[in-house]
Length: 320
Image (tube, rainbow, N blue to C red):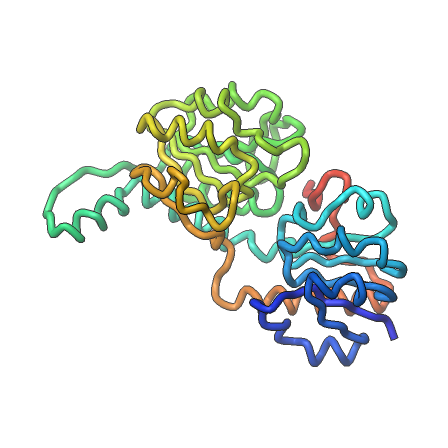
């Protein structure tokens, strides 16, 4: 019987379908510390603790590993050169977070335009102050990242009559979800004139820090930065510098260091709205991740094509 090692930790409940998994394969539950012993002889690893980097340390013991499934959309935390160069197939939770994150982005766009955060603050102070808000129809959105989540964001915002353009590796004019996709190598030019910059690119060597000081300085006054990808996609110090002027605003679901250190200026800036890496985590999300893995496990055991295969050198599942 094939051996499956589930990488977890003490803060996580085991997958809710653990009994069904045990009917299919031999299951080992492993903490990061125990992984070197429990990955030896394992045919597959299920990264239930998807932020763990333990597999890299345990790699010399992974003598039979053929498949790694990461229970997340981003696989950056679990990829490393030896794994990339190996024959091990990597899959992820593609599709699970598309609609939840798209709705979260739409909520942040609406909260900004309709002044929901200031409204709440005034209510807390018992101040009745009439204000005018803005229509989002026709506002310009640049979505950096054209994978499944970026496409879901584009479809939802376009349904709200917003003008949405994508940014990806390759420019094109007839994309079914974005219409126009611009090349990421000219990002500072592309952000001029946008109202909302949505960051959802995968974190790779080529995208790390792509939203740099030059890009942030090129944003027009009043623009909103929404990061639902990875904190390291943005030069955080450059972002803080721009935010400190009051010129732009930000909704950050991810930051460079998580949890955000208590001494970070981001806590205090009035034009920043923080959420603790939760944009895709709707009720029942862990159940759905477990079910998705079980379905893929059945495919793997049957020798069928796996769902959500990651291009390891690119660092993401290719869409289109």
